[in-house]
Length: 166
Image (cartoon, rainbow, N blue to C red; front, side, top):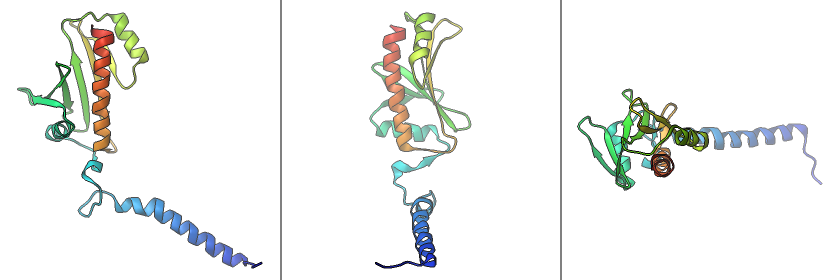
């Protein structure tokens, strides 16, 4: 049986800690964005986004999108027109939809807000139901997170039309 001195144990622990630290602290820094970035395009970090960038992501994902006269992205979901808006500071996205002809009631809208995650619905000043979802880009989000947000918007919209609007 080999005997390991206290000094040898300390050296082994220090070496193990150094390897552990390198793997979990130093390596991710090598993948940070920059001219030598090793990130895949889909892992790009967005702290700001333009209308053209979000539109390109939506088209790449197969969504039907156009641009209105204001430059806003019009997203067709199951035949309905919705909007994907980029904040003036380019640091957030907002999905928005409203209906002028609906069977929405305050009770249905409140029930939606009680049970739905990630979205809000309200009756606007004209008595029309509105659905909104936001994505804050502060701190950075990947393309994959944006794609997930788009899926969430689509799913919430389809459910909202069924449960609140119709």
